[in-house]
Image 1 (tube, rainbow, N blue to C red):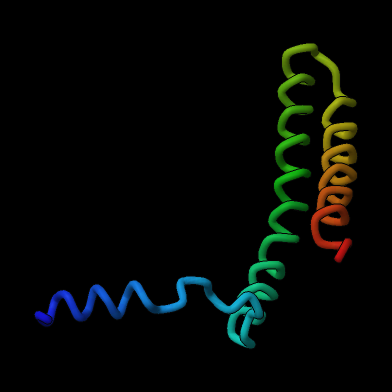
Image 2: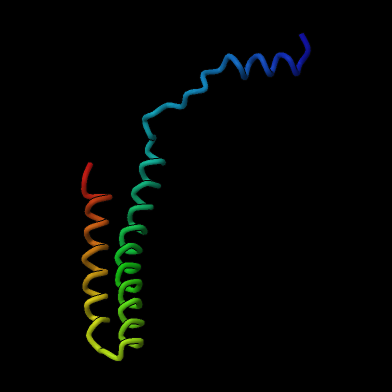
Length: 88
């Protein structure tokens, strides 16, 4: 048996399924990811919907839609964070 055939045979006999239990390093990365994702969602909700409200205010000549956009964006962002990270 040649060297390349032996390596292919070894690769084919190895167990291809990874271990489903995360190690401590993976859990640490997951927690770090959550620590950055949650404030990012909250900020994006406020800025996105606040910006949309400001644009509508500018186009319609009003001055109250931006406040509705900011509060609504925060409420939707909090709901999304709760839905995504609050349940096990």
